[in-house]
Length: 417
Image (cartoon, rainbow, N blue to C red):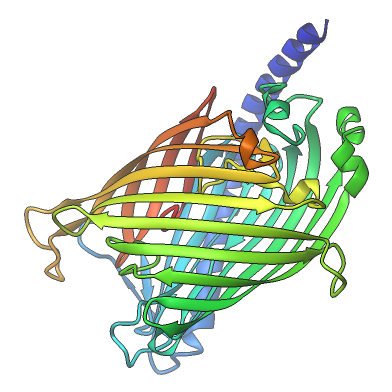
């Protein structure tokens, strides 16, 4: 009887989903096009305040259709494109990439960048993401951030691998609506060549509404509730020998961080998150051909809310899975990725022989569990991606990832790791 109801529910969702897509494309395309044009105009006006003596110029490089606002000190590249993911369905995404140099006297310091994106989807999801990476004088100080805002219909399977397997698809027993935002910042100081130490700050807030009857009885939801706010301060230690952090061809990155969280600001910490992140990059014969791999674990102790459990399925790990379906206190995943930028037969106008086009492919696996001794179920993951250089060593990426009975497209700037 339940399977018959679920089947009817799925058919209804699919029918409504198709009709929503058509209505969304028809009604929203003009609105988003105007919005992006307005954003570009506002960005130009704002950036021009720093360069009053220089008028902005739109450049097109080679035969590639890429508009770039160049104010000598600041560059801005906009984009507008659709994406598809299990969480939001079809989403129209707009945004851009802002890059500049804070320390212009040192040509060896990499440029700072602020990629950002916003989107609205066929299922009523609204997302905003800003990921600044700022490099100060002589690269002695860095600030890296991740700012999110999501208001969307979401799904919660429960905690643990087994809970995520039943049901295998979102349905009326998993659905709810989530309003979530986060400000996550890292500050690091170089105290020795390639060695950095610093602090972390995280504030995030979740308001869950329209909870289904199954979710209302979930022990973690009962314990922590549907309105959760978290503050944290933490410490980090890094080793970083990458030639360029946003798109490394060579080098190693290792980070150990520990964040101490509280459900209310400036009170005794209630739980702790420990993260170990290892990444390595090897150039194969020439620049633009890179073998990259990452191993990362996230460990949460007792007292972590259901919203802050370690999760898999983001655009930065096992691409293709429903973000948040697999969650538990501990998480571990590994990725092996090959990145390839094509070469040209004739040089570009700047003499560069490397093409602006490329691709990537990857294999990955990961799991979640209550502790490491219970990590026995591993999720397979593979994918193929398209790369297009919008600014020097800064790529727009289109990734298609697949997993167990699931797949998704992702569009953003810079590499997954």
